[in-house]
Image (cartoon, rainbow, N blue to C red; front, side):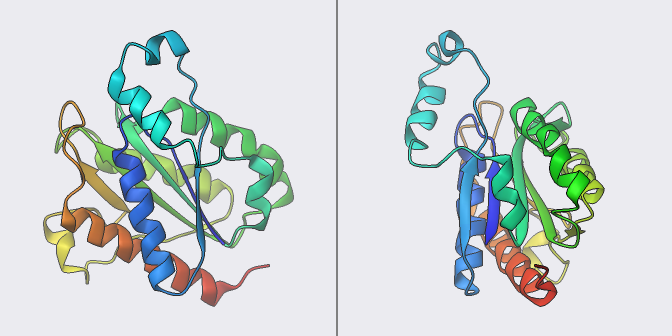
Length: 198
């Protein structure tokens, strides 16, 4: 099972997560989506209709549980950028995985990352790289998107799937972004199948 773990506020990171899941499925694999717990106070969310609508849209997506990660074949994590880093709710969840680290539960399994950001130069690749660090601490094998995918000339990153969605996050990921996300999902599944770490 490919476990796609993400945080989103306005839904663009979810769109990339769904495309990665499609790529896994197209390659013959199984993937599940899991959201991290929303840490913002309800009175803050209530003032933002788009934020509320996104949370409503995700009602059917279960919240991630650390214990679920022991049985995954690959872990894919996604986040909007926050000053060149992953969003705090995702980082908080990752910080709870120390017990898995102690047991080596993720060692040798595939890890991958994806992000959304507001502007072309607002920390996309620094966020991808910083998200890889805990996966490397877990002993995971990092999978990215190779330059043999022609869309990487103008979209995405070798480090993972990306989308630049505007200052107000009101531009959805492009077709090129989604194609690269699907390609990443396919690659994750193919490589995790070859490793077959149990």
